[in-house]
Length: 304
Image (cartoon, rainbow, N blue to C red; front, side, top):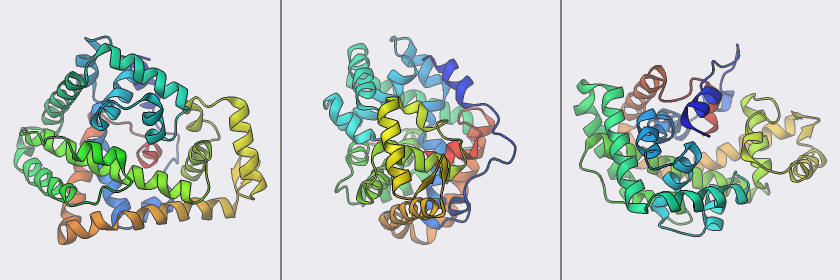
């Protein structure tokens, strides 16, 4: 899939009435911060300049996503990458990963992705954002440097990279590190609650208000494997047909609460700066949406 195809698929206007669930809209500090930094942390995925530069080396949208997300961990096997990503069918991720590694070296994908992202963020956020970007980026980098990496492979990879001198690059890397920190925790919360990757996808999509399959169907799991995962959710009383039961809603909200609790270290590290940092990131996030460097559907923002 090429970038323009991905944009056409994911940048459509959300259906009327689409909104984040109450647990997100009325979430605590950890959730608020996560939704604020999401558009900046995903700028390399949705910003066109990155794909233009990587496309010159033969990489399509998914090549750029998989290799661009995996390279901070080094060059592990495709199975390790698929395990860390969690939500996707492992063979899909391993195949894309192996192809992408054949197109570009780790050093090149790192350099081109981060340079293009910094350049694109500078253009998107505007020249007058430089001082605020430098301040927020430095503060978040300080937070990242003090976090415990235990059990967080994607976070640890990003956090172990050298920090860019460019303030826009530093802001991006700090937001990406925090995104992966929460993502690693979120996967752990799901696993601890006894859910497999397909069930993670389905519980999230229904909790956010997507119809069954619209979100989970993009993860390439076979029909028979999906059917078995859904039957298990129904047998556990979490699904009624293709709809979450009250117990299903409670189970998904419990996952969110566990994830937030695992992110308390981030909240504590920001301390009195959290409100100002989250407000600034949220404003930049809206700028990214307005500039079409992040999808406008609030459910997509909440699902990340």
